[in-house]
Image (cartoon, rainbow, N blue to C red; front, side, top):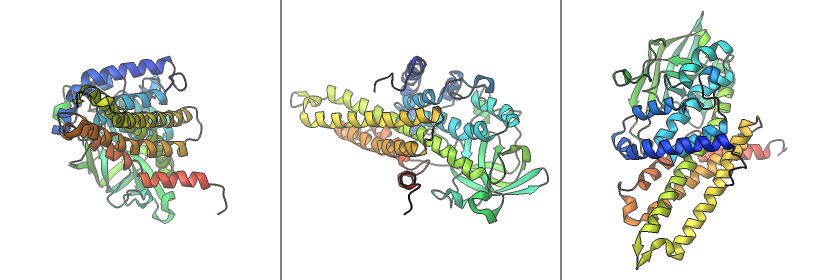
Amino acid sequence: MHDSLYFQEHHLATREMVRAFARDEVAPVARHFDDSQEFPWDNVKKMADLGLLGIPWSEDLGGAGLDTISFMIAIEELARVCASHSITISAHTTLGTSPIVNFGNDEQKRRLVPRLASGKVLGGFGLTEPGAGSDAGGTKTTAVRKGDRYLLNGSKRFITHGGVGESFVVTAVTDASKGTKGISSFVLTKETCDLARVKDLGMGHDPEIPVMKGFRAGKKEDKLGWRASDTRELIFEDVEVPVENRIGEEGKGFINFMKTLDAGRIGIAALSLGVAQGAFDEAVKYTSERKQFGRPIAEFQGVHFQLADLATELEAGRHLVYHAAWLAQHGHPFGKEAAMAKLFVSELAMRATIKSIQLHGGYGYTKDYPVERMMRDAKIGEIGEGTSEIQRMVIARHLLKGLSL
């Protein structure tokens, strides 16, 4: 893609910085953390030190003071070598922090955002429930007002940073008679499950965060991909949440979370783009080196065509992603474009990783090459933050809006 269309000099500088970090610090350990399913705390600390956990937030809130496009560049570059590292900054920033930045009041921003933006603690987002996945309006978690507090009961499922995180924005029903207009959102806090591990790290735990009794993480999920990312259930048993921890007005939780997911879709699209690009890079490298019938297999027309098709689709996907990011950054409506980017690029990531394995032959099926991990990491892009089917519904709704059918 011609860099000047979406990128200015500071974007290219961000890209070089994150690319170097991904190459030098993440690529050498990506397989280890995929195998062990450990959370890569040391690298997350390095990412925090580089400002990668608060890229789009203002400096007075503890962030890096950069923009949405810089944030998407960082997500893409990390995902080229390891999607688990990438989803850590993506989920923490978009899901764990942006609802407070976008919908919180000044006091909440000052109180809650700096520790997240600086990476002092990790954040997450509780929307999905055992019975409410694509139907996010089917929330069963309840919040009952008792004076200056709410009492929360229920659970959330598949929550990124569920165990390692300390700050979570979650939805709960405050008025069951109003449907989605009776859902509100709250910030809940707990201790990280890795207290001993992070003690000397200088991040991951803030002793000043209130530990809310009855709020805990459940078992860690054993996943196909994103295996170094911490995914768990969150459980609420009579959790007392102060009224000043409600984000926005009562009943605004659902609409605000839908806006958050719109933005999050650009992030998942950028992550999927990185996975697809990484798999393509591996395919080009391997086919240039691997010899059969006396010459590199990249010289065969059958391989030419496959590489050409992937390169073309990657270019199309990159335009979709950065066009949506540009719209978001400049305050234009971007819901349709975000859904299109997420749909196209997440499905492209599956095609690209499967094709790359095919081009690697038998070697692609082994753990000696990263493409099998990339394929496993790609799949969740078609599921998380709205399945491909939901994206198609969102796009169609935008297309048909205003038409009397």
